Structures are given as structure tokens and as C-alpha cells.
Image (tube, rainbow over all chains, first blue to last red; front, side, top):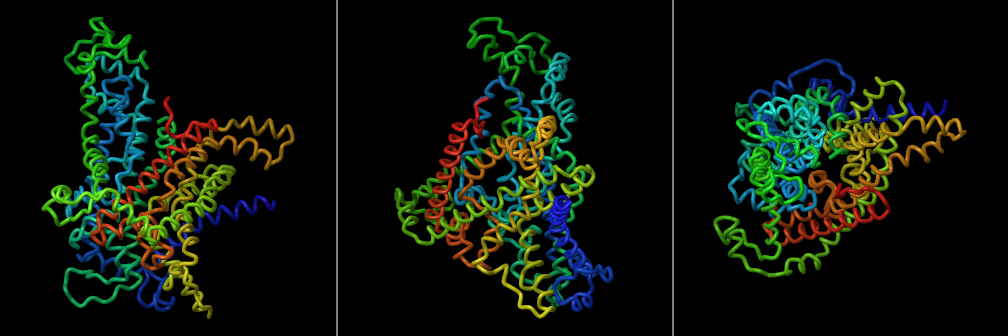
Length: 283
Length: 340
């Protein structure tokens, strides 16, 4: 009895420690100024009303709105590029015994052992003219060899007979990849796509390094300067004297930063074990 | 391997189906088609690896070569492009390394890094294992998948977001302080106290990643034969003995693998997490090797010095991971790099 009570307690703590902060952030973002002041000025825990003023303020065309677009653009374009090149390379490397298989695989895997370092990476990215370009947020991190290895492992588990019979029917490798391999690999493509998308959406340091122009700031940079540095940026397109952001406004930005993850996550989550662990262990 | 590949037939669309088995002019290796035939068959596969390969060349291998900066008195203004600047900078051999090794701030950063690594190895590393065993013992599938859904989630939050959550909950203007103040208690400086910073960063790392860390252990637990438990229960083994003699041995390969990875990464302790909090807490406690490299190079323009510190870290990391892998192989585990 005591044992199962302790077990229940431990599991509840695990869950609540995640849910309570998220709840409080959501409630605060929907609180009015009065409720906020009543609660003590910083965070609200018990909802009184639902007030969308904070969301209206940040979505009316100021820096947060722009950052939201930038982050969306980088995430969508980046994920498309990463996923395409990763699928191609993973399939290209999925057949041991093909020409150059071993050296090319070695070329990819060696990146696990050799880490180029911050300074040379910075010099290369700025040297090829990507400073203040949104490409600097995509190209340097476009290929994750870990994701590639996971996907390759998954591809290798597809029955070879299927591919061989397609080849006998005269299908080329590109057609086989598109028509046979990819439809069978939806799970791993979903998971790897989520990993890439989350990576782009969450990237903060690359933007700190490469983006100086505030018109191109992604959401994470804006979130950090508002909350952790306590700056009050211009929210609306109009140049009226802006009030310092209330906690509701700050928390609304937090909610917007989490929202896309919360929306996509449930669709992909059920593939985690199937797509990732199998690939990782076999790979 | 060779069995499946000899049945592979010519690749591109127009080629008639024809076994690619060697017709025998100059067979380089036994049972292999000549290189030209194999090239004709495999060129699409080669082509597919090119875009990813080029990206790695440009943004991984080229920067790796760029580490020569560590041996230069690199002056970014000596040329119009970094490459020109590189060639017009003076070669000073190990001069930058001499500077680093005589800089007390470097040793402070190294000490902080290693302390945090060891601390997290003790207080973070076992947690996902314990949590996985706990969650695995939940019988209801629904409850189990609900718990997994919730605790995996913070892994997908950015560090900016995680630190934000901690500030809003535990910071000077956060929920906890607000409630304490209303109760007439002086709130502690959890987010800015250098003395307890190591606990704070570990708590943040646990909040973000301990749940996600379970996933691999849960997968390993699922592969343990349930008959083992039944038999040992029949033999009279209690819950703890079963944990010790069946569960933990079943998890051993995964634990060893993750320990190797962690050891190879001993000099990294979460880059963004520390940069985000370094200024609030101060350099004394929050300067780690990665932040040291950043603040000594890009933030100040002292590229050669920072590159040398980064190269030191990369080389030590490489040695660590090779040693850890060797040790794992010696004690009979599969390890990270295996030729299979």
C-alpha cells in the first residue's frame, strides 16, 4: 500500500512539475490588468476571466508579429530543405555494397567525432556572406547526421525483395524512393521532420551570432530580450509611446512560442518509439 | 551483404533486367561486378548523397580546417574576406595556447565545466533510468501514455523558453516569490545566486530532458523477457532482487552506451543554457568552456585565442570519446564505434 502510494506520488510530481508552469503561463497571458494586479503583479494561477488584449497587442503588427513570420518562414523552408536532403542521403547510403558506400558513410559518420568549433564556423558562415541573411539560420544546421543515421536504419529494414522487384520492373532509384520507400517510411519521416522543425523553431544562438538586423529577428531572440533582458520593444506598427509590457503580454509571447510545438507534437508522438528507437538501435 | 547485392539488377530505367553478377573480365573482388557496371547501376545513389555531403563539406569540414586560426595571430581586418585575413595573419604556432593556459579565467571555466559534468552525472544521469522503471510499472496503458506525453514535452522547448519558465516560476518576480512575499516571507534569489547555480542548472536540465531520457530505457525495458520475472518470482525473489538481477542487467548496454556519450561530451554542459544565464549569475559560477570561447572570441574579436580554446575542447573531447569507447569494448560492451 505504502509502496503504491509513493509510486502514485512520484508519478504525479513528474506530471505536475511540467503542467503547473504551463498552466500558470497560459492563465497569466489571458488575465486582465486588474486580475494581474490583484494577484500581485507577476503571475496569475487562478483564472478569473479570459482577456485577449495581450494577444491583440502583440499581433497587431509590431516586432513580435514580424518575428513570428520570420520564425515560421525559417522553420518551414529549413525543414523542407533538411528533410529532402536527409531522405536522399539516407537512401543513397542504405545499400551496403553499392559503389563508394564505405568511404561515403565514413565521411558522414566522421562528423560525430570531429567538432569544428564555434570560431571557425562563425568565420565560414560570415565569410560566405550569410551574415544577416536568413540562410545563416538554415544552411549551417541543415543536415543532422544523427537524423540521417536514424532514417537510414529505418530504410534498411524495408524488405529488399520489394525494391528488387521494382527494379526488375524497370523503376529507377529515384522512383523507388518516391513510390515505395517513402510511403513505407511515414513514421520516421514524421519524427525526423519534427526534430528538424523543432530545431529551427527553437534555434536562438545562431540568430544571436548571425542576425544583427532587428527586422530579421526570430521569435526566440525577441522572447529572450523581452523576458530575460527585460527590454520593452515596439509592439504595434504605430509609433505611439509604448507602455512597458505587462506580464500578460510577455506570457502571451511565451504561449505563441509553445503553440506550434503543442499543435504538431501529438500527431508525431505516437511514432517516437517506432520511428526513432528502431532506427537508432539498428543504425 | 553480397547475397543481396548480386541479385540487384541494373539501375537506370532503360536498362533491361539483367543479373549484375560478374561476367568476368577483371573481377576486382570475388562475386562483384566490374566498377563500371556498378557505377552505371549505382550512380543515382551516389548522386543522392551529394547535397547533404556538400552541406557538411561547407559547414562542417571547412570550419574544421578553419581551426588553423588557432595558430594565427588572426586579425579579422587584415583582409576583405575571412580567407584573405587568414592568409595575411601571422603564424604564431602555439602562442594562443600559451596565452590560454596561463589565463586563470580559462582554468576557472574548465573547473566549472567539469564540476557541473560530475554533478549532473550523479544527480541527473540516474534519474531517467529510475523514471523509466517507475513508468514501466504503471499497468494502465492509458495512464502510461498520458505520463509519457506530458514528460516528453519539455524536451521540445527551447532553452530560452525553459529559462523563461524558471524565471517566471522561481525568479525574483515569479510566482513563488510573489506568493512568499504575500505570506510575509523574504523570497530567496534562486535565479541569481552563484552558490546554488549548479543546482539550478541541473534542475533546468532535469525539467527539460529527464523525461525524454526515459524513452530509450523504456524501449530497452520492453525487450526484457517477461518470463524471467515470472520464473524468479516463483523462485521467491522479491521486488528489489528482481530489479537488481533482471531489470538492471537488461538495461546495462544502454546505460554503458549513454555513459560513453556523456563522457565524450564531458566538456560540454549545454551551451545556450549557460549563455542565457551567465550575466544574471556572474562569471564565477556560470562561465563554462563554451561560454568562455564565445566571450573570448566573437564577443571581443579575439578570434585566434577563442579558436585555440575551442580546439583544445574539441581535441580533448575526441580523446575522451575514443578512450571511453575502448574501455567499453574492454569490459565487453558493444560501445559506440563497432565494426559490424
